[in-house]
Length: 175
Image (cartoon, rainbow, N blue to C red):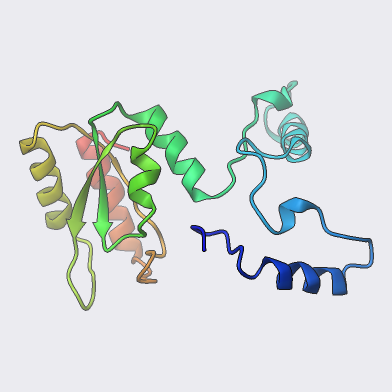
């Protein structure tokens, strides 16, 4: 089984889609990831929407990038917002692929903000401890990765917790 791409059930899924699809077989993107920068049709549609509704000027569809899944988005964000050796803080426990998402290309270190069983509450003190540890190890903290709801625990952070995270990041001048 691959990360977030269930190839084990693909045959059954395609059979089910075929059984309810009256217009022929579904496009390949229905059951698996598409191009890393998004399908050309999607990018053209987004460009057209932006031209009409937001920008009110021509938008080149080749300048639009739609990411296929969270991993490619995190990879791009880490690569754009930090330098190799910088740190991304992630509340623990976290989804196992997040570390690779920010490390493989961008070269970020990951520092756990250790939350505790059974509530896994994220506090400013927990964030600060992770931040201080990263700085003591000689790294600049550039990102806080919050997965909401938390993967793998399914915890839904309160509005107050999310607000605290945003204010903490703003005070630290991190993303």
